[in-house]
Image: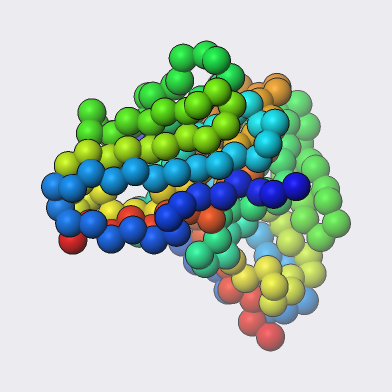
Length: 115
Length: 111
């Protein structure tokens, strides 16, 4: 079946504007994750959804960042009042959500540039 | 607080030789470790994993070794092929699904 898809693939926005990034996980995957990769750095965990449980928001860097997930499908990551340091590739991943350690499948990412 | 560290930002290996990528971690609660491979403009793809109850896992040309006492894991690729050129990330799980990633090592295989 189809893999994880993300849209848009690229987004250029002006500082101070809000942006919404979308993730479509693999069908049937109950767990969904958002990560961020800044230039030259590793993947930084942002937020994790598992079924109907309360999301793990421990990685969100500020209250300008929020994410929602509709059931076990689409998720949107919203960044309000964007800043230049928000420029990064935002990656979404999904997994079957079974026992810990099961591999996550990543989308191609959204490259966000804040000018 | 970098809980997973890949101290070599880059590695260059001749085609046909062995590539060894290293990763160190600090959190003794990590119980599952994974390696991901990433090509430019693509998301990371899962390569191989190992549970903390094992010290070795092999899949074709790829072998992951885990030394729990040293909190160290390594990925061996043999023989290395040009298509292996990519950025490799190690990741660790504390048993709660969330993965903690290292900074990545860029592997270049020279013909």
